[in-house]
Length: 71
Image (cartoon, rainbow, N blue to C red; front, side, top):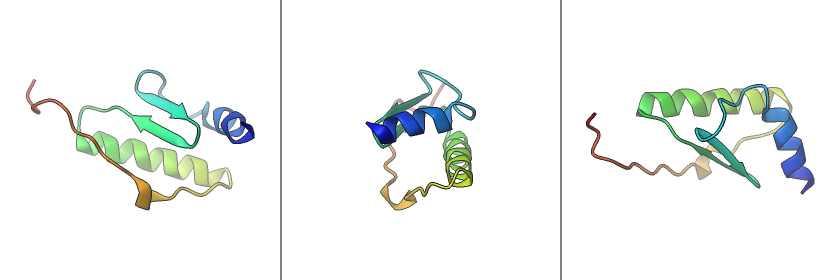
């Protein structure tokens, strides 16, 4: 519970907001339109969290793609 409280406080300044970024315990869900946007948002999260003294394990990242890629 303490981790969740700390993450909520630390991430307020760089979150785009719901429903595009969802925090649950020590997991993060990022919803974006393109792979480039995903890489950008994940790097922003990683840099921001690490600047606050925490560590991000990028080896655990999972990606789910939905839709047909057309607009």
